[in-house]
Image (cartoon, rainbow, N blue to C red; front, side, top):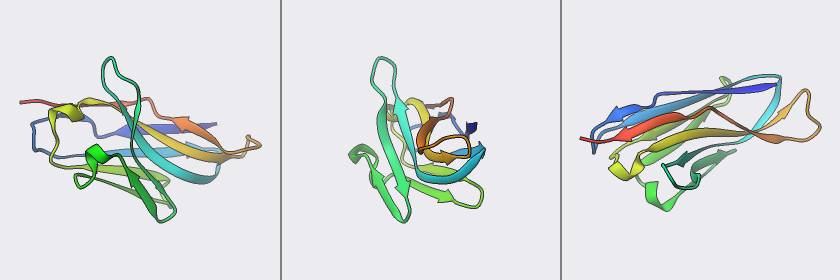
Length: 120
């Protein structure tokens, strides 16, 4: 069993910053790609950023404002968000591709989501 626990969401004014964290725990052998997705009300869940090995990938809408990083030893992925805009308001979900002790193949796991609201 693998669990992802997110933290760091909240209410922030436009132009402000937030840092999200997601810690993975459980029967983990290896973690491959880690990433963040977001879902605004009435919209589909979209990719925000991913990190795999030394490579990162960002949605065009967040390039230059958001930075994804990871602490491999702590099995944690971070999303530093700056210059936040009202359109960044969404529930942010952590996603990790994990090879667990109980699974034959790596699979994706999701966190429970953390609300980010950008409003004055």
